[in-house]
Length: 118
Image (cartoon, rainbow, N blue to C red):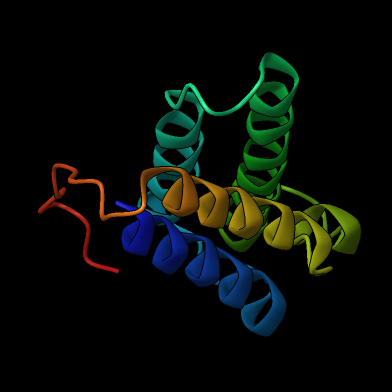
């Protein structure tokens, strides 16, 4: 699971920073939900850390969903809402994934979603 979580957060970072979320679709929304759920299920994180994880992933998803609406002609252009491009939020999540791996010391199995194309 740790490798998949890192893959997904980096896909989200790349999409925002390099593409401005122009390609945002249901797969990216799934990544946000999967990362949030997977990390928040871990007992190594405090309740405040889980709130932080949820808030970060919700914000990244909110930006992507706004970009998707704009790209479909259903929202006005607002660059600050389109994509979160600073590294800090992505780095916080990546660090949490690293902590997860360090706590377990081995790969954690997960159920692959075959419906994801990205």
